[in-house]
Image (tube, rainbow, N blue to C red):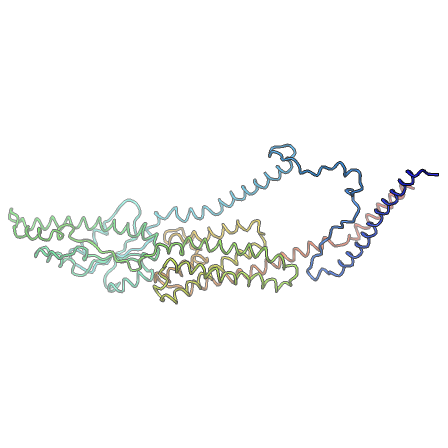
Length: 519
């Protein structure tokens, strides 16, 4: 007969076995239910079944296992970066940083030389800036200055000076029109009767004589403020300073020789010169006529640097859309998914572009110069929206194949290759940079210049180029999405494809060989 203690131990063992058998039965039932549920979710529905962890499944970490008593629930102790225990993790960490550094270095050499090159050779290309010298006087002042311009030679950069006959270019209004049409960068015009007015002022001692009325210089600063400020105006001023000073010295010597013809100075002439000394020094000068002044320094934020911000804002929307659309992509058919990828960013660009345009109003940019305040604001918003759509959808298309991991590399490339042709006019850059005429930021910048400063209008062409980029981005987005879905479907098909007959036959042969060897 068993002792009471022994009976108690047997009862306890039976309770433990009963407790272990119940969960296994429950787990089997639960596995059967999960299998039935998985069959109801067909792959064509687009819903990916997620395996659930079975808490009742027996494991090596069961609470009845004696080994669990030795497990340490405390977190692992912190280790130093160079600790031997972290060697595998440290190796992976350094690989990631090393690959990123190498890719960024490659990106630098691909992109930065383009921007550096856009600025590096401009001083040697000033000869591409066409400048006209027009003589309307036809007498001593005009002819003397024409000869001085032909003989002018100075070290360093120079403009492409061309002598134009007055009859070929028309009056001053016609010259101004040609400058505003971007046919010439600057025009120096010797005014009619410049010689007669100077001679009369000297002879009469005219105190009201203005030397700067002899020459007028027409140019348009807003055509490209960097080129006009750094090259056009300084080089024109340098040329005029040299030629007018030389001519004034010659005419002053000639005039003093005339009034000292008898060996004694003419007292009357000296008194008249004393009354009007400007007739001798400088004698002749010039007036700068800025047809389109760049009178809003904050406009540079819109025509150049602001376009970079516009691209970054579009990139932010692309990243947000990439995260959000992953939630619904498995459940949507292809065409609906493409419509979502295109329409959602286009809707998001609307308030962003409006906010950007309102900031321009807050800083009082001259949006009403050409079309009035209301129409100018609407037009500026329209072009800003088109520009953001062109830039944003191109990023949206490329993120499909690059994935968010490498999208910033494309963003940097997109910015650099768009901005480089805008910093200077085509005449001051290598012909390579003429590609910018077909890029969004170049056309957006030119359109905003026209709206704010009434420069030569190419608004229709600007809109056409930007819209073409939008259409191209929509097409590439569609193609890239189709390709990636096709690749993903093939990958899934290979994952669930049964073993080929050849492999099955090989396996059966091997198994038969094993059986024979056993016999």
